[in-house]
Amino acid sequence: MHDENTDVTNGCGKIRTGTQNEAALLALMEKTGYSMVQENGQRKFGGPPPGWEGPPPPRGCEVFVGKIPRDMYEDELVPVFERAGKIYEFRLMMEFSGENRGYAFVMYTTKEEAQLAIRILNNYEIRPGKFIGVCVSLDNCRLFIGAIPKEKKKEEILDEMKKVTEGVVDVIVYPSATDKTKNRGFAFVEYESHRAAAMARRKLIPGTFQLWGHTIQVDWADPEKEVDEETMQRVKVLYVRNLMISTTEDAIKAEFNKFKPGAVERVKKLRDYAFVHFFNREDAVAAMSIMNGKCIDGASIEVTLAKPVNKESTWRQHLNGQISPNSENLLVFANKEDGHQKSLGKPGNLSVRLNGQHSPSPPEIERCTYPFFPGTKLTPISMYSLKSNHFSSAVMHLDYYCNKNNWAPPEYYLYSTTSQDGKVLLVYKIVIPTIANGSQSYFMPDKLCTTLEDAKELAAQFTLLHLGPF
Image (cartoon, rainbow, N blue to C red; front, side, top):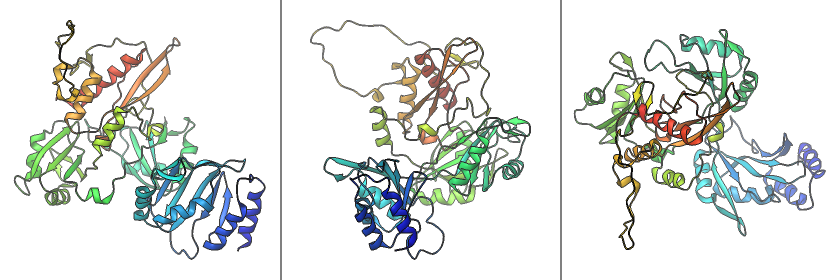
């Protein structure tokens, strides 16, 4: 064994409890040839493994492991995870007491091995009555930068971010939906590694950092949803970005049908982006290569394959009241279109009109009660079998709308602030996962409410207005 291994193991022994078998760890290192180093609250086994040459494995090769018994260590865990493939690095999070913190990260040498680990080890009974959870772990290398002057071009933003932070790889800037010569007031900055992004965030996060005389807002970007290659091979829907607001679904369908008449099944447009459904995957792939970068109504469009979501499991989670695991990473900006927090004034009244437009809720709905007589026959039904005029609540309308469009359910995220007179003001942000990779990644009204029910209803009304008619 290397001297480094001996030193590290001896160091660990100082904080090791009696439940941990140091001899077993030494035997594991002797058998595998892997090194083991403890630093910054984690113990690294491997990284790289013996004989490894070249760069580390790409993104998508690491899995997160949760619900690990606190008295379980590498000598028990590594053999379990080796069943899925060769381990590049195993990182066990450690307490100062010597116990583990209940979770770890396992990096494999290929994405296929990581996916296999998820399939065979998620909900695996690692000890009697103790089941671990295994899911994909993605290092976030992207930051959200808000309050950027709208007249700045991509090249200017890229140059500026390279001056103030290190490791910048690219900048993603979306044009305004109403004026394609301007940006939306925000950008996504891609870094070469998670560490580089974290260091940049640490430098920019105090809230006093300025670009071009503007105090910018910084946070982690929501990580993109990963879809396995097998699923993507079946996708026959295209995602089209950067459309003009005035461009119609019929115009989009006509443009995408030009290369092969009748290839497009239907088009669903939302604000300045759309989903184009094809009858055959081959036609969708061909249209993507032909149409990407083309102009429709004067706007240069971007075309990619749409990423599907598992609607059944997502709706099941929604009905069970489960929360998205990404909720803690969501941003707090009031409106991505503006990229900065709205000023906090006196509250307005919640009404059926938003920004001068009528709420999509039906204007006249019969709302009364009828007597329920003993013996009345009742038939169980689903709310989604009803018609839209059965709903008076915008929250229920939005659920219904998403289900009818075969989308995942809306996710609600609550934020608060304090008004000038000391009142707690509330606002909900709504994310619809199916369309969250679009230019409109979430919906948030520019009004704050004093009650939870009003805040949720207002957010649903606002979202329905932007999604368009049923």
